[in-house]
Image 1 (cartoon, one colour):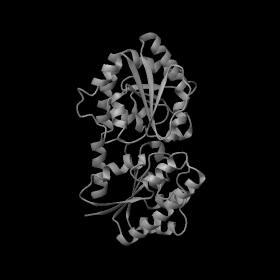
Image 2 (cartoon, helix red, strand yellow):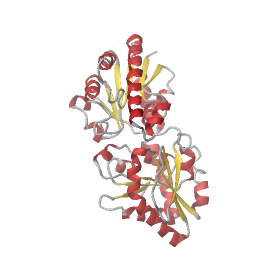
Image 3 (cartoon, helix red, strand yellow):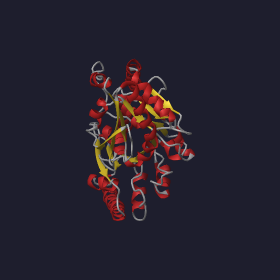
Length: 364
């Protein structure tokens, strides 16, 4: 039975869970050891507007926990080491760097990242050099991220979308029962994300407010934007009702099943190009039609005018108001998009297919 060490920031860190831990937790024919680099309590504290002291505590914790983790693996000698994004962001220095390289040199290394960790300076140059030198397999979401790697690494890079094993709908005939029952009275728009993404949604709030006014005047329906995030969206609106819910993984499925439209706006900036469209994949898993900025990988997830609507908002956000209107007044169109979304999820973003890929990488 192979010994596998998995370096992540724990179950509270979304990328750690959705990219890796939801799969490794299900692998029973290998010995998997989680090497969490930070506690859930500290990660939550760091995620919620951290002070300078908190940032220092966070990175010191990573340093000392990795010192312990690397020492343990120097003794345990795992067959496979899995690294999520960056194991030692900001603090890849002596003696950690020497211990880290020893582990990587003596194991098969699988490195996974789903964001432009180079562009946002999440990974140090030292750690990036180590991982690009010693990785045996690199997993990313898009060609854009693959092109961030040195030539040698491109030959060992594979694509795997980020998906959510908790969300697939088992009873497709009844999934929309609650949504359709409320469709005649209101429209619930949903956005799920971390506080770093709030700038993207703030950009389209005026357009959503404009849409709420138009929908009210034409149909009498109220439009609500539900934001599930570690921090609230604070924005002044006249017609659009904003409801903030503190993010927790077990809250998301129920809120998705109450929503009518899922959205993923993105500012047309360099960092957006590295995004893997995970929100859109989650929406599709529950048959939720989506509206998204036509930026980066979004266009690889949304099939325009089939599973959702892609908005060209590089110049202005007027298209968002029109897209919301389309999905708020035509229930037949909404149903068709919902059905197509679930079919597209099964075809391109299946949890079972990802699970099979991870199982093969870790056990064969």
